Image 1 (tube, rainbow, N blue to C red):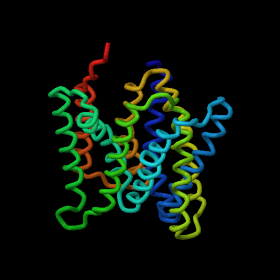
Image 2: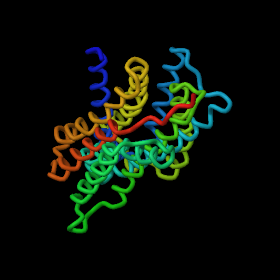
Image 3: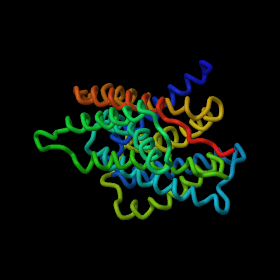
Length: 291
């Protein structure tokens, strides 16, 4: 990779790592529904403008099927789950849980796509999910104060990321940009009823409005543009190394801006999860191609 591409990859990790920080700032006033509905809607409008400039189009005909699946199960539901979880969980914990998506994706590929995996890959899955157990066990389990629903919501979001990533491996005939653009509009429509049912909790201040705008424009729309641009330039596998950067930056932003405390279970769990992802990435084998 060129230095400029490495710099963009690091920037992408910093941007997506900061998204959990902005959630924590915005959710007290907006609530999870309006916060995430606003984020998705702003991203959809922003990407539509970029699409017009780049002469990209919305999905057409049968292409809407993967866009609907992505919009519902990769954007709307997971982002609502992250918003709900951000009411109780720290930025550090949210960003570390987010890093488990490749583990869920590998496990689902193994079961659903019959993808072959080496013993090293299986060891990586075991190590990664052991890290999850270590991470969760430190969140008030012993004194009965564990925020069970919030943790479950965060892991559900990560599981859906892994599931839809597995699904997209079977999708053909639609450009990635068109799929993202269409799925954002689907997710926007899906979030509208929730925004009506669960309106804002209090009058948002400048900080809350700025956080939602940043989530939509920077952390979603422009981040996707950079993400797919990097995939075109350096390939999917190198671009996915951003997974390792998100929890590092998420922890950093939480400590610096919210004075969050990092426990031993955070460090141990994150180390095991990232080590597990590394082993899984090296241990996965492509299925044999038909001649």
